[in-house]
Length: 390
Length: 97
Image (cartoon, rainbow over all chains, first blue to last red; front, side):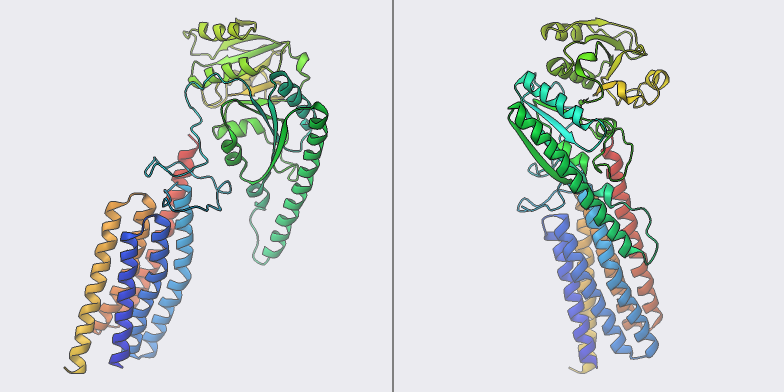
């Protein structure tokens, strides 16, 4: 009896020790987690079994049994939870890690360049002063919605104007589609069925949208390409941003591809996660836009939006009016006017608030508490009038 | 050497190994570098605490220590889950800025 107890204790302690060495020596948090959860549980469990064998009483054995069952049940849960938290918080990988299957599935935060080599989907959204790159690529987000076809037409015209490549990016919002709300006990099977059905339907719709783009793109004679991605829309779109790339969306269609029938302001939501600027195409025929009110708040981001707008200008007939956000009246807008002159556009200083007939471009959606106050007042929720957001 | 002496020696070695493990985990808690690393080491410490409570039951002969082991395992699990949730939420909120 002593022999068995002693063996259990020694084996358990050695495994615990091994786990601790792993925690100390392994190179990244995920490997450390792997060492701690497996070896730790078996080590601790063996020591408890040793106790039960030594004592031999029914009560002790039962208690030890409960404790071990508990360890076996909880440690994997805690381990997975912790691994997910580590991934989301951007804990750096060991440099030998090559496969990341969660890339573009779960958004990962950029952890200060500890190793300097980790790849991350997050690019710095507020990169000051992007180089004045001409528009070389028009990236249009494909999502089924009322304005999709008009937006494709407009994107094609835009790409032709700049002799740019047209790139359609079709995204299926898997996390959004998988969210079926709280599932009552016993309904797991039906919930899984519903998720599957939704995703399948979204894939069908996407195929249809892509086909429409293909037809039109082929006729136009442009260089064009289409990408299909499944995962979290923000992360995917963010990963595709590059200088010279103009991001365009059609309002009224989110990447659930119409399956959830959700009314989401696409551009506002994408801007919210740091992608800027975003042009909204398809609401109004391009040559009907006569006057565009640009809401400027003096920030770098707003300046960047203005430059992009001047370089790309999808609305050639329009003249621009620059309004300075209330509270920033002292700002000089000479710089903006100069940029406009260089690009050959008409721009004038104007009042802070836009008229009802004006179309609106928001320089920096992040300023003044997210959304210009006057915009909510004068045109409540009328996203049809907003042409671009920075 | 009798069985009793051998047994005492095994108890001593086991205790020393557990102590060494706890020290190594503590080093990881101090060194980090991420919060997740520290929580992993803390989780390891709570498992070591469970094992140590089992050892205490053997050495003192008081079976009540097995209950302590059970409680330590429970609290350790809750602590790990809470910390993990905290890390995840903090990083999501930080991302929105």
